[in-house]
Image 1 (cartoon, rainbow, N blue to C red):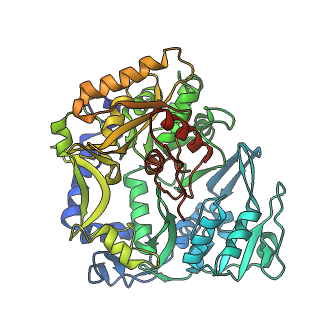
Image 2 (tube, rainbow, N blue to C red):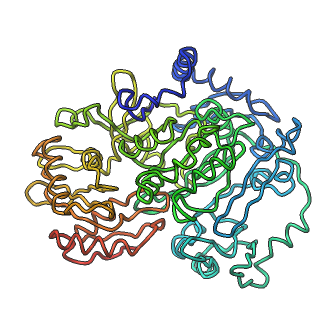
Image 3 (cartoon, rainbow, N blue to C red):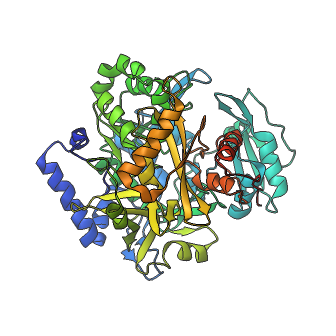
Length: 582
């Protein structure tokens, strides 16, 4: 069980369990999933439709990465669309499309999606990979090289608050750089920025649609790959995470009902993946047009639950510190809205407490730590250890790394035989709740003391004027590492900056101990992040140490690093300009 925030400080986080019977039901499911995983997931698999039943629920013969529902045949697109149409729900809205940037709103029913399905690749049994729009040419080429796609489907441009992103030079440059050449490129031409077509290679999306014919869902094995998701994290080269058809469908269906509490009649808004009736939002949490965008969506579409990242909530709070835009719609919001899920990065109690109280709904997080007294001490830190998961992994987990089985084994299974290595540090309390403190890369060794940078951040973020912070370790000839903190503070406050810095140093010393040795604190306008909202601590550390680093492909704003380099130089670091490694 993964704990969000403590019950004592945030009693509202228990509201989603409305009765003791529901709590008992969850406890029973949790116990069965651990003690009898085959029986538990075989039962869950009955909720999706199969063309051919599986012969073996769990197969561990292939190594540490388990195979689920071996021999079974199904189709993900069929379960997402045909099942609804066949049960008489064809005219029910499946997606709401909302684009404040282009002033466009529309809806799509299950029947409409069946005619021109977003899930066409899954319907055909073809493996697909979705990548960020606007990737640099080199990074896009690396993904093309690894995936070796026969077909690339793209829009001619993307629309951001800061302007139009022309995909033409990026895509053409990537294909030119890659040794693998796709047979065809299907291009959706947007009037905002037409794509220059290459004769013999490129075809227009509209022409392809006009020539298309309906296709029955192709039965595929449950263990066949569904998609490849390339992830580079905050540094390093991309890894192609592979998920299968059967396990993914079973786990997703179970989670939407049992974790997110979403039924077919409910509207779900995810800032990443789709749910049941979903809101497809082409905008930002702020700036399209303001920090009230999420609240408008919730009231306009009757959203019951949503999924977002802590970064989005911090951005909203920064722009609307008194929640005035939220308060305008609070009564309407409470008519349908019941829960908010956050993930993707570490959260902070101050932000979660703010929105939990204002919204009156639980914020359910899987990646934060919160002590009742906010205190951190050396004894507490000694309890933190690397978090591992006992095998077998459940359905829906990654099955391998594309074209890289050796790294898959070495990275996730070699160090702790019989367990999956998460790469996270944390601890488990007496009730069985898991507190995820930080990535193992975020543990620094200060004169023999192992300290998670997340613990230091927890103390700093409690200071009212601090909007965001990042703590990282820099090399020190005497202590091995020493922590450095970079802060983003509320621009609307008039408290002297020197006072805030002094409080940061004092609070960390008093709440964690003098052994932490936090003395260097800098103020910056923004922190460098990936587009998914993760703070790039490893890159900041490389800049501080004047070490070579490779610019992550998913960085949201490269210019932020120049500002940070200047601040670090004033603190005595980044004495030489870091060289980008290839």
